[in-house]
Length: 430
Ligand code: HAM
Image (cartoon, rainbow, N blue to C red; front, side):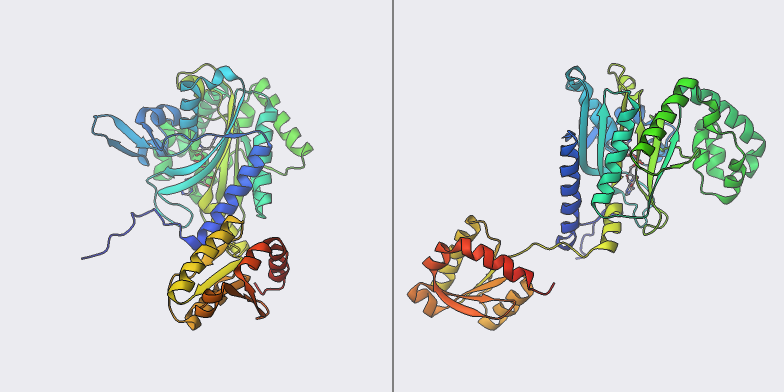
């Protein structure tokens, strides 16, 4: 019978990779907690309408990429393609808006039916944060600063922050009209995708990767010339505050996000090396209209999300897998010794040590080989003699030194052992 394979665009995250994931999660959790963000967990599937209304019918995500199906109750449901819409629904439904400003973060799988390539999957993971209830440009700057600090905290370099303002709906309406007027005479020279977008979603044409289209866009009107004075002022404030925080950015008038809910600030963080074509590590911006669009009160909001698979690709190029640091590897042979080894391992774990117990019941030689490969600092050995007289051999795997002690002494001296383990780890080869 042929083996069943994982679905295209999904991946198993195997134990040797999990260390990276845990590292990203830990750095993110510490950083966001310190900035008073609280984690929120929303369902993985939602009513289709949430995304259709929230993200916009004319977007690629809603138009082509959603995993939508009819459930047994005849409801149209969709696997979430992103986190913001679900967070906003939860914010409204649970009355979080009456509790004042909300700083939230989330992490989890998202689903988009996209062409699969390096850094682009159909099930991928996002880490995101959202600030709901503040129109202050400092909120925009705060979330951007957190994103940059997170990436720096992971040791990532060669990242570029692209910044734009997409104005408010009135600014955009005027701009869209000017853009369509400019592009229409070139309609036949545009790539087919852009031709399609000309009336549906003309601003997305600015994002085209097609060389010919790009040339045409060079002289297109820029959104900045269509920003009302108030929109212009907030764009300037965001830039000034980023500069005050020493956060470098590149202004990019062609930066339009793939989701329709953005107003004013829009940004993307791009890896200049290491990711190939799918080089956006994260993106976000302000979305002042989304909460009311989804049935809540008028609520200004701003946030971002990062693709964890992309962070992982970058991290893997930088550091080797973080491994679990094992203190003891316990080997034993013989019925009585094996029973005692189990007890000893458990007692040491309860005392806070990291302990791996060899369960193979194979010859000592084989167990020793595994002990050497385990990365443990020391090996505990129990054979028939040790079991009979309640002792254990303690072998330091770095130096090969070995000593015999009673099991009671071993447990009585755990604190001293803790220091010896630490010293011995420092001398071990990596
Ligand atoms: P987005 O730009 O669509 O924004 O996605 C954010 C990040 O998710 C991307 O920069 C990328 O790193 C990652 N990503 C997206 N699609 C894939 C994929 N198919 N495979 C791997 N990684 C992917 C949003 O989703 C917004 N909700 C961000 C936001 C939050 N805006 C305001 N608040």
